[in-house]
Length: 336
Image 1 (cartoon, rainbow, N blue to C red):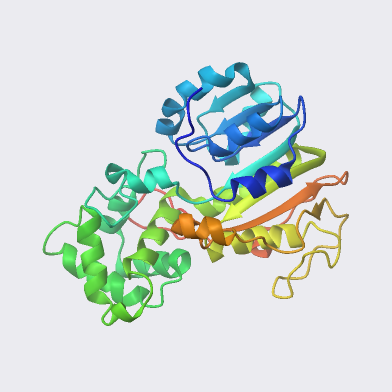
Image 2 (image 1 turned 180 degrees about the vertical axis):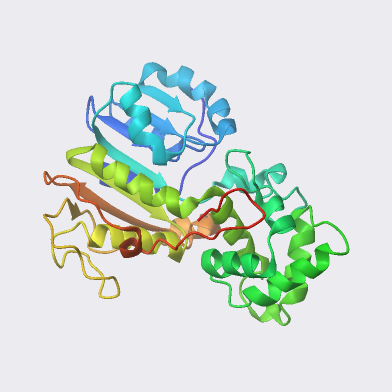
């Protein structure tokens, strides 16, 4: 038996809350290195469908597929399309779904993917390797567009200053590498040494979320999960930053019975039959032992719901906190 290459954040808590059962059908919506899928398959004699839009993640899983056989079925598509992809395979309902949002540790560590500014690599950040990528956005976006991306998806207070610095710098030479972009951002953010994080952190987060439409994918994935889950089925979501966590929190607040694990900061819930009940009284953080062993786990939060029998009810993007689209005039179409 091959050893797992990566242990996902809060794996023990996720699988415990999911409570896999014999002959159940589950979805690992963000397969990555297969950590959640492995834990689920080990916990019960069940079937797991693993989704990942990154073709390299699917290619790396060949040994794991050989290990678990027909119990593990991989699909190279984004989790926003899980409903259609499962229907094509004759699956019309599942017993549990897990999401581990954001970029994976493997993607961060692969220099050629351009997700991190710690080492020099090309500006890509596309999880599926497609276009337009982060390099295209940096090369073609104007000051207003870049500032909107950094402000909306990175919550960067110096978005305008950084955007102007990027546009000015590319007039001298193209910005094609992660370290070149990070250097420009660093120069545009004086006294950043007083901050706990490098000034490029929010800019890189914003570019990654934008080019991969991560928030739009999240909303579509949550809606698909609600339609796919059988009564008593469970959905578990691990978030890593406030933008995605806010969407997940509002989704559940609008789905739980009135007053159950809601938020006084969220818009009032729609008056319809609840479709979920909470797994946890509030978001669950990782334990001290895990955060000490894995710095990337520090910001993680786990939320979950148990599907009730009420039918799916629509909910608009604004109520979920999904930002409006940012259109780039030098591209054929806008992205969120």
